Each structure stands twice: as structure tokens, then as C-alpha cells.
Image (cartoon, rainbow, N blue to C red; front, top):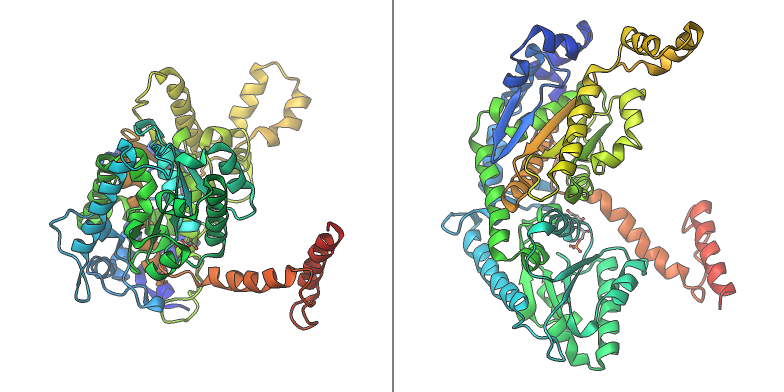
Length: 553
Ligand code: G6Q
């Protein structure tokens, strides 16, 4: 039995789960008129209603006790103090320093992190103002109309998601494009749409060694030089965001046009750093500052609010209950706002890359289930597709409904329809439809008794399916920053409870290594890989591709 399973609160939760049937939400709401008001918390313009979870008072109290038993406060302090909590890479995880005010004091070892962060922000602001105002000129003297971010994973998902989410307050007129896939399709689409003389490429890669990003960057560079007929054009059309200055220079980008960040910024926590350059280009420095301010406000809430009122802690505890005590193996993210349609993909990386681990800090097996499969897309579309399984499937799928109160546009009437659906879905999952209710509905519709009998099992919804509802007052930079930071800290808290390192990603490495080897073997002129190089299936796939190449020349 793991250390976690031996903690008194964990054991008590387990015992309750075994000895008591799950609470029935309809009954909980009926018997406790104050439940909804009590099981809410707000911070930074975001309200979390967690009352539609299968938690009674006792389970909730035990989850709060767990927070103390795992020593969360000390771990939070260690993160904010810049300790090397990413133990396997011997690095701090200090993304919170990226969004703190200029007069804050942060240090990693002897280094004054705050000064470095704000020096880069100052350079980013100056650069973005030049591009946005038209002062920055392309090689042929025209101003920039299109920005293409080339990056992948943490160097793509954050900026892509935020630029989309806040597109309504983008005022630069710049058209933003994101290229991450290396199959040639995305970059070709961009090349078709963008005029080379007015396109700026942002090559974003922490390591500047990532195969996909470098291959796309080289393709973009060849296209640009080919179109403008001059190698020297690269200087006016390429900037880089990286921690690897030497590799950036080797690529041909002047280090004056490189914006740096640091090894203590994990890729999936990096949108607040220079990786956010496309965001600042699209929205302007003031709105980027507001995004940082929202995240900082959530940081302050996270480190100061008591657990029972702490948004990220509550979200984490509910997740723990769902995963470890209700056996939920997935978590659905359902934003009811079109602009948030990339949020699930962003959160998928944040959570699954951080907590998709099976060993503890000390290398021993965790012993309990860790991160669920996180998935989703904007909720309205989901309702007409996969929500069927969420309502009537055989496995519990906890949902995070995310809604925005202020439509902020002229189409309030349409927005209201989306909001009504959010509320109705959460209610339907909670209430379900009993056999009596289903029968009464069919009787009222005049169905014959035999038909009612046949249909009844299909028309019953068990209900009692858990969900959170997160409401943002507005979708603006401040609240989006706060929302993202809340999920970041939720992930961290769960990592603390499971005693895993949420900041490394060794699982990504093996595939990368093998891909480099296979790429060489796909060359039809390269000698065939030896019998023992791969299993028969892998060898067969490689051979199939080589044969295809040979037959198509
Ligand atoms: C994020 C991961 C991963 C990373 C990409 C891109 O936490 O480490 O998604 O962001 O592999 O890496 P580079 O930025 O180094 O190109």
C-alpha cells in the first residue's frame, strides 16, 4: 500500500466509499437548501459551482483534511520560493514569477529572476509596438500584415488558444497563423494565404532542437528567400523565441531578434513568457499585461485563500474524488463559448503531460490512478455528439462546464441560447430522468402501453452524474489569465497529492528518439534496417513506405 493510501484521510475516504452508497444529488439538493450557495467559491471574476458533485459534507471534510496531510502548504511555498521542485530535471517551476509585478522579488539560486523577466517583457513590448505600428518593415519596405508562429506543444498550444480566445479584443489588424504539424499541409496553407513580403515568422522553441519546428522553420525560410530572392530577407522576417541562443544564431536569426526565457519555465506553462509573443503582437502590450495580471491575481488567491475557498484547490480535490474514489478515467472540458474552443486541447496538454505519470518523486509506483484522460471541445457541438455517452454511457465522465456571463457583443440573444444549454446540460446530468417521469411523459404523449414498456429502459437517465460549472464574468484578458492559472494550480495540487513530478515529461522522449531513427530508415536509398532493429510490425510499416517511395519515382 502506498504512502498516500496510508494517510488517515485517504483511508477514511476509502472506507466511506466502501461502506456507504453514493449520495444522490437530487436528494442532497432537496434536503439541503443551502447546498448550492455553500458549495461555491469565487476569485478573480470566476465563480466555481461544485455543488453538482457526488460529495456529502463528510467526504468534503475528509478531502480538506487530505490537503493538510499531504503537506500542500509547504509544497506551494517551495514552488513560489523557486526551489527545484522539478526533481528529475533539477529545475525550479517558477511560471508564477513570469506574471508578477516588476517590483516583486524572485530568485532562482543567486539569480534575480524578476529583473530578467521584466527585461525581456520590455524588449517584447518595444518589438510588438514596432510591428503593430508599422514601423517594423519587411525586406521590401512594407509593413507586416501576417504573423506565423512556428512551434509545437507548449510552444504552440498556449499562444494559439489565447489568440483565438481573445480575438475579439485584438486591435492590430495582424492576421495570426499557427503552424505545428510537420506533415507539410499547415505550412503550405500558410504559404498560400500569406504574402511573403509582409509576413513575419516567430520560430518558437525552448530547445530549438525540436524536429517538427525546425523542419517547418527551414521550409518557411526557403519559401521566403525563394519569394523575395535574397538571403538577407531572413533578418526582417524571422524572429525567435528560445532558451538556446547558439542554435537560433546557427539558424540565421540575429540574437537581437531573439526573445529568451529560462529552463525553469516548462513548455506547457510558458505562454506567460516570450512564448506569448504572438499574443502580445495580436492584442498589444497592455492586454498582455492584463492577461499576466489575471494569472497573478489567481496566484495570490491560490497561495493565500484557505483550502475550502480556494478555487484551484477545490477543483483539484473534486478531481481526486472523481478519479480515485469514483473511478472516473476521463474528464470532459466543455466551454460554452466559441472563442474557447481550443481550451480543451490546451488543458489536455497541461494536465496529461503534467500528471500522466505512474511513479512518485522517489521512483516508487504511485499505487493509485493519476491523471484522467482530459478531452472535449466547445459544449454545444458536444451536445449533438458525445454527450450521449456522458448522459447514458456505462462510465462516469465528470464535466467542467465553462460559461461566460457577459456576451460582450451585440448577439446577446444567441449567447443566451448557448448559456441556457450549459445550465440545462448540467441540470440534466444531475437530475436524470426516472422511470416514473419517463413513463408519465410517454403516457402524456399518448404512446400505447406495450410501446411504453419497450421504450422505458432506453428513456431512463440515471442522472447523478458529476459536474463543475465555472462562470467567467467576461471573456477578457484578465479573466482568461486567471482561468488558465487556476487550471495550472489545480494540476499542481493533484501532483502534490499523488506525490508525482508534474513538471517533467520523460514519456515524450522515447517517441522523439525513435522517430529520428525511423526517419533515416525511410530513405529508399538507405540500407534496410537489420532484422533485430525493430519488431516485425514496425519493420513492415517502414518497408511499406520505402516501397511506396520507390514506386512513385
Ligand atoms: C511541454 C513539453 C512539450 C514542448 C514541445 C516543444 O511542456 O515539453 O510540449 O513544449 O515538445 O518543445 P520546444 O519548445 O523545445 O520546441
